[in-house]
Image (cartoon, rainbow, N blue to C red):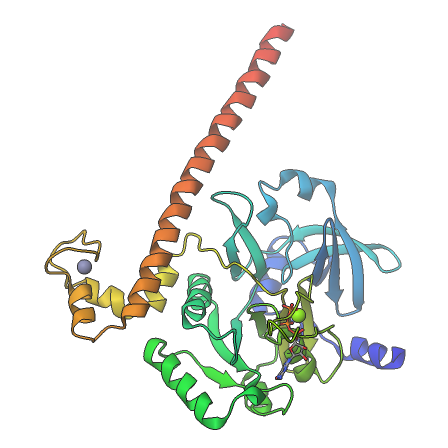
Amino acid sequence: MIEKKNLKRITMTLEDLGYHKELKDYRKENDLDSFGIGRVISEHKDRYTVKTEDGEFDAELIGNLRFTAASRNDLPAVGDWVSISEYDDGKALIYAVFPRKSILERKAVSTLGQTQIIATNIDFGLILQSVNRDFNINRLERYLTICNASKIAPIIVLSKLDLIDKQQLEELMVQIKERIKNVPLFAISNQSQTGIDALKSKLTKGCTYCLLGSSGVGKSTLVNTLSGDGLMATGKISKGIERGKHVTSHRSLIVLENGILIDNPGMREVGITNISDGLEMTFDEILNLAQDCKFNNCTHTSESGCAVLEAIEKKELDADAYTNFMKMEKERMHFESDATERKKKDKDFGKMIKSIKKQRRNNKY
Ligand SMILES: Nc1nc2c(ncn2[C@@H]2O[C@H](COP(=O)(O)OP(=O)(O)OP(=O)(O)O)[C@@H](O)[C@H]2O)c(=O)[nH]1
Ligand SMILES: [Mg+2]
Ligand SMILES: [Zn+2]
């Protein structure tokens, strides 16, 4: 087992980890060549595991990086490229975070108007839904929207194909294709291995794929299937509710020969943030229709001459897609007003601190 690990370490290159020209150029332009470079593969509170050509390091931030971070989102996340220096065997300090090519984020669960990074520098989102009870087109559209908003190319993967027969699969495919167009769609089973080769052949060396989906759909099992390794712990499904019990607790990045995977804990909520671009892409049919509405500021709810409502009436537009769109649009507006309020509060707070500091300075003399 140890020998196998070492072998992997020796043969891994920065390119296998996703390194590319822009990163190289940035590194040069910013005098970061004297530092080592690696990618954050997992995160545990204040500590990070950083993978480099030479192996894995247990790393923490230099103080300056921590203190100058305006928010949690400026700190390293899984997927980030970082400059490091080794200070002890297997230990390193992180000096800089490289600019991110993409950021996959959702609404923070506990705080209003804030986002939470899922992972960074992702090329493709592998959206998993199992063909049994997890299957839900509204939720698929939600994941598509957050991928589209982040310029991450979505790929839909239906899992646990072994649980249904051919005809049932056909029906699901038809349902999806009615609502979702131009998104690659795969159907797989980790158990029977059906569809695994087709999915594998889609993966490209150096590209990063983030696995998304509810708990128990088989994300970690798929990572194991694709890597041919029992790397990730996977869960048992409770018979009664046919769901997993949140087995994966941390995000982690896994380097394969063909591509890089980021496994995620299953998500209960996929809250919408500032994603108008994402909505436009996911629901381009609705947005195109909206251009023909009589009123410029049509809300597509009750106006006469609303091209969207007319299309629903004529069964040219799926009513469920419309309802889902409106729901997410409403969430987006809520998020934006929360975010504006939060910014104002932060600004007021900043002003208060400034005036206290000024007062102190004045009192000194
Ligand atoms: N029937 C069937 N079961 C599967 C398949 N793939 C995974 N499972 C089972 O589904 C359960 C959950 O799988 P996981 O891979 O742990 O699911 P996960 O998406 O990683 O779940 P979280 O880590 O909680 O987000 C396990 O009991 C797996 O054995 C499949 O293709 N068919
Ligand atoms: Mg898992
Ligand atoms: Zn309208």
